[in-house]
Image 1 (cartoon, rainbow, N blue to C red):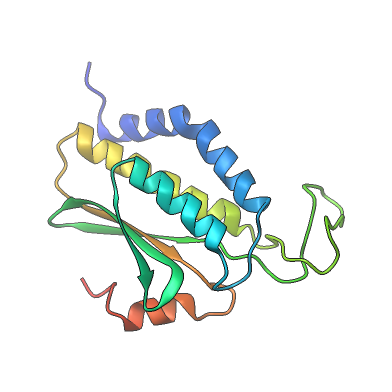
Image 2 (image 1 turned 90 degrees about the vertical axis):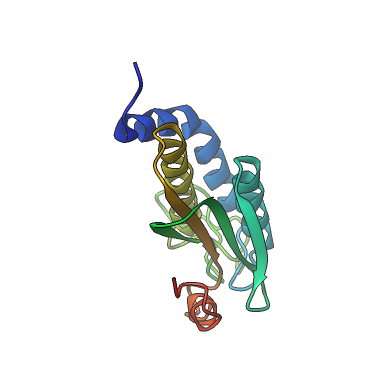
Length: 163
C-alpha cells in the first residue's frame, strides 16, 4: 500500500534518524564561529548532494553559505539551516559547565541541532514529494553567521529569497 505524504515523511525520518543524529553530534564536535563554519557547511552540503540535491556554494562571497535545490516549478519551499557556533562556549555534552577547551567556540544555541533538523525536514519533504508525485521545488539554504546577524542579510541582498 502506498504511503501518503505524511506517512512518507515520518517513515523517512525514522529511517534516517541515526544518520541525522550523528551529523548533529559531528557538527557539535567541530564548532566554528560565524563565517568560518567550513566543516558544518561542507558536511551538510555533501549529504544533501548525496541525496540528489544540486548545490550552489559561495553565496554573496560567503564561502560557508550554500543553496541545495531539488525539484522544479512552483511552489518553492524554502528551509533555512544555521550551523555557526559561539565564541567561548566550548562544552562537553553535559548539564553543567564543562568546557572541552577554555575559550574555544561551542554550540551554546544548538545550531548543530537546528541546522540538521532543518536538513532532515528538507530531505523528508523531498522524499514525500518524490514518492507522491508532488510538484514543486525545495531549497535548503545553508545560512552562516546567524549569531552575528549578517549571513541572512547578505543572502537576502543577493536576491536568493526573491522568488
